[in-house]
Length: 343
Image 1 (cartoon, rainbow, N blue to C red):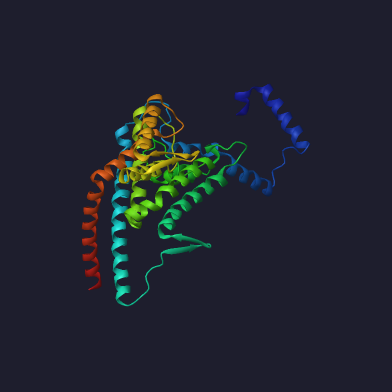
Image 2: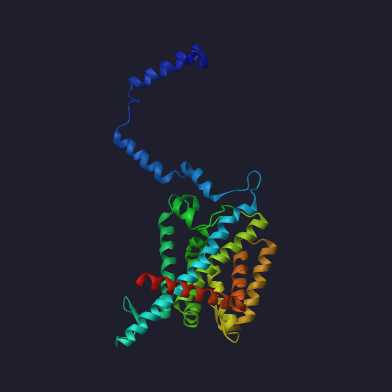
C-alpha cells in the first residue's frame, strides 16, 4: 500500500534508509524512563497543547463574526447580582449574630472583644485587620502568578491555566466568576503595591464608618460591579484585552471617602508635600479616564474606573439606604428561621 503513494523508487530508498538506521541502532525503542521525562516536559512547557482550553474560556478573539453581546452579559449579570445580594445578606446576618452574642456575653459578665489584634507581633486595630485580610488575599494570588510563569518569556501564555481561567477577565468570555477573581489578581509588583497602598490608606476609615461586615460587602460588590462596567465598555468598543487588578474596588473606596467627607485632603504618593481637595482630585481622575476611553488608551481599564466611581455615587446617593432596608428584611427572615429551628 505504501508504494502506491510513494512510488517504487521511493519505497526502495526509504526501505534502505530504515535498514541502515536500524543496523546502526538509531531506531531502538525508547526506554520507559526517557518516555516519562519527555511526557513531563511536554506537560509542563507545551502550552500550545492546551490552546483549545485556553481559547475555550477566553472567548471570541477577534477572528470571524463577533458573538451576540447580549447573550454574553447573561451570566455576568446574574453573577454580579448574586454577589451583591448575597454579600449584604451575609453581612446583615453576621452583624446580627455578633450583636446577639455580645449582648449575651454582657449579661453573663463576659469580657468585651479586644480592640487590638496581635498578628505576628503587630498590634492592629480591628479595622486594620479587616483591610489586612483583603490585602493578604491579593498577596496570595500574586504569589501564585509569580510562581506560575515558566519559559524564557514571562507571558500569560506560560501561566497556569486555572489562573488564566479564574483570575483574568476576558470581556468576550461571558463568564461570571472572573469578575470577582480578577479584582484580587495582580501580575506586576508596582500594580500590586499602588493598589494595596491605596487600600490601606482608605480602608480603615471606611471600616469604622460602615462597619466591618458592610465594608467587606461593599468591597466585594464594588469589585464585581466595576469589572462588569469595564466589560460593558469593552464589549461596546469590541476590545478583547483582558483585565485584572483591584483598582476598581480601591477607586470605589476613594470615591466613597470623597463623597462622605468632601473636606478631606487627598495626596499623591510621589508628591507627599502636595494635597488636593478630595472632590477635585476625584473629578480629575474621572476626566483622565474619560480621556483614556476616547483616545483608547490600553494601559488602564478606564471603563472599570468609571464604573467604580458611578457605583460610589449611587451608593452614597441612596443606594446605602436601599441596601439597609434590604438587610432589615433579611434579618427578620433570619430571626424567624432561627427561632423555628431552635424551637
